Image 1 (tube, rainbow, N blue to C red):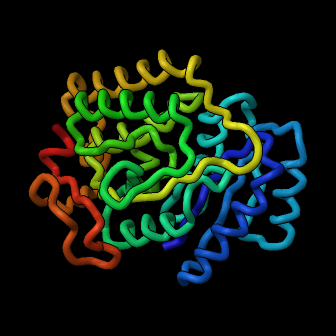
Image 2: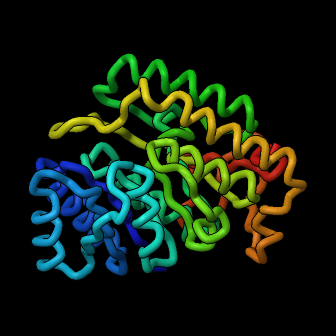
Length: 281
């Protein structure tokens, strides 16, 4: 199974090389040599493009792609999702806040048959380091609200770092979000359209270089719009957009609410399996 990693990058000259190198070294060490890293340049003003192109010249598994629609995290991710070539794709940040070891855990879950691999920084075994207090407070409120609305048993929906089989990306189109609200649109559409998922603890570390692109004051209404849009689809569409209706096989690893994964490559004791009745409540 070829793995693609999409990394949106805007003015990340201080971290993009370290991020790409760390991902490649980890994947190669774990025997996941069949991979590509699609670095999507969101029309950076610094040296980001030159650095990515140098990485591409050194290893053809690194690909430089210029986002055709500048000025939005969501646009950049969507551009990467339009061109990735793998059987599965993960979205990671350019600042090395996401752990390459957790990427391997995601890959193993997809190998085990899940459609989506979600991580949680806030379940047992997960952790955050140097998380800004205001953002952490808002994060917990927003994720609690989303979990209450959708009943999907997941407490870290807003985190961009997730992995999906190709057919998931195909069945959640069209994607509409131009900004960080895409981090909510993708997993919620995947869940309400009937794709299976497992949740594993992950680690997050604050960036060591550059500046965060997330502006809390600009995102409240945008998150609300996406959540409401998918919520209405879930309750009013009568299942017209579910994966079965699109001809995609639905692979559930069902169990009791809160049950642990059992069996299958990569299904370890720290993986939370969300059964069908809970994930589509």
